[in-house]
Amino acid sequence: MKLGMFTSGYQRNPLEHCFQDAKRFGYDFIELWGGRPHAFAPDLKAGEINEVKWLIDKYEMPVLGYTPEHNAYPYNFMIGSELQRQDAVSYLKLCLDMSKELGADFMLISPAHAGYLVTYDEIWDRLVRTIRELAEHAEKTGVKLVVEPLTPYESNVFKSANDLVELFKRIDSPFLYGMCDVVPPYVQHESIMTYIDKLGRKMYHMHIIDGEPGTDSHIVPGEGSIPLPELFKELKCAGYENTATLELVTGYINEPRLYARRAIDRVRTYMEEAGY
Image (cartoon, rainbow, N blue to C red; front, top):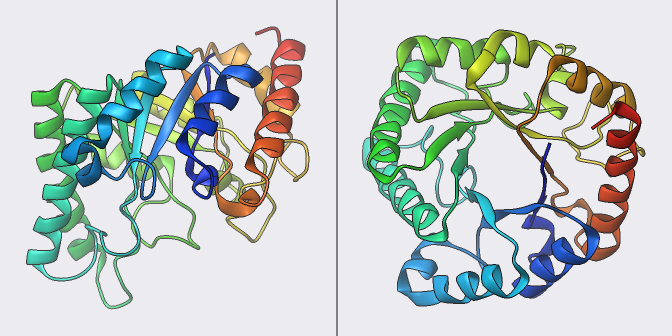
């Protein structure tokens, strides 16, 4: 299993620190957060992609995944007018184009909150129309589109393995996949391993981090309540060999370098104990 560094928590540091540290600490790849000041897709299109490519080459550290900022201001394809939805779709198509230019294998999206007045029918109509458009563009770029369920503290749209199963029933695309961030199932009393059982070959990626009941906080491995050593043993037993990102986000933004090192040191120990 290859382990990636997520760069969101480094947004107060130069982007080069992410690549330096990924190399120094023993990460296998970067999952690049697509927000300013580092890798906002319109900025990449305007020429700043050349700096990212230079860092990829300098540190021999690939960007396997690109995760654009899109479930907060100003982009959220699940809320607002049709004009706003179309604007978000256009932005995410540009993100797919930039993913291709970066040499990324996949782009990750997560359907955010749709507001309090929408019905399930309205949610699923908008969700399917949007992801179908993006999947069709993904097929043109050759970049996989990976969809991530969120916690109920973040979204009322897409929160479980069953939501992914339903999405794949409605959209048949060879470039559309699912993934599991371990925090959403944990805080909802859903089994993490059911993602592998239910999604099969569509289970493409993971965000592995620690968590606590009652919050969407992403905590350094070993400092929350998720039994991660045992989880890695179960993943090994299930034959999971795809990628996993250690998704430290902004909770450690003051010292991302210290906690990025601690996270991978802990997880490498768990993996060794599990026989990876």
